[in-house]
Amino acid sequence: MTNTARNTAIRGHDEIAAFEALMRQHNRRLYRTARSILRHDADAEDCVQEAFLHAWRRRDQFRGEAAPSTWLTRIVINEALMKLRRNKATAGTVAIDNVVDLDAHVEASVAGAQRLPGPDAETLRHELCALLERKIDELPQSFRTVFMLRAIEEMSAEETAQCLGIPEATVRTRLFRARSLLRESIASDVDVALASAFEFMGERCDRIVAGVLAVIRREGPASSSISKETK
Image (cartoon, rainbow, N blue to C red; front, side):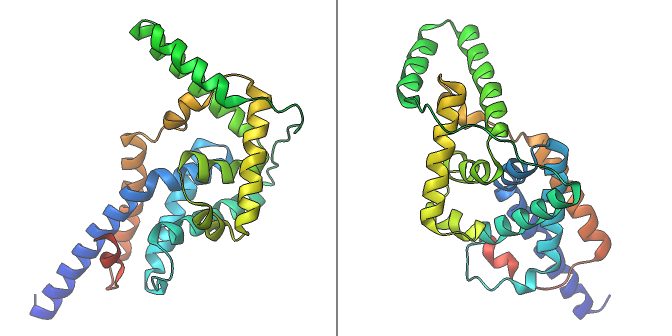
């Protein structure tokens, strides 16, 4: 092997390693975003894998005008919406009246869970988490995606607006409506389970990364500047 070939191989290996780190860093956010649109675990995994492959193949187009997380989130949103159109899926609908005070219920729920024995508190947490996931799935799609990005992934209104291509004011309105719908639909304590909603376990992360890397290695690496973005 010539020095040029050897150097190219080293650069390719380093870039793949950098891209793997990028995937692991943003995997959970992209999965949650895709699932908020598709409402199906396996479809969301496929969507994230396709989005990463799209990003890898077009990495030279990344100019650093937005954060890598924003760039990747835009890609996965586009992939999910295209998949949704192909599947002719429809968003759920929920009435928007009779808003109740969710925060007060949350405080009471947390206090109640703290008084329960360890196993009981854990059981309650799992039940609340499952309930929250079901209720989020029932939100209209536009509200559901904003809620996932803002309330669960804790993205800023500005970044959410950039990802979705909508004004910040619309982000704030949709988040308010989403919370209102959840207050009405649940009428109990759900925010206590937000941190564990749509759990992104290591096995799921490894499966997505392995699938993307397998395709990348078959196609062969090419030089780009994306490795700089993970440092």
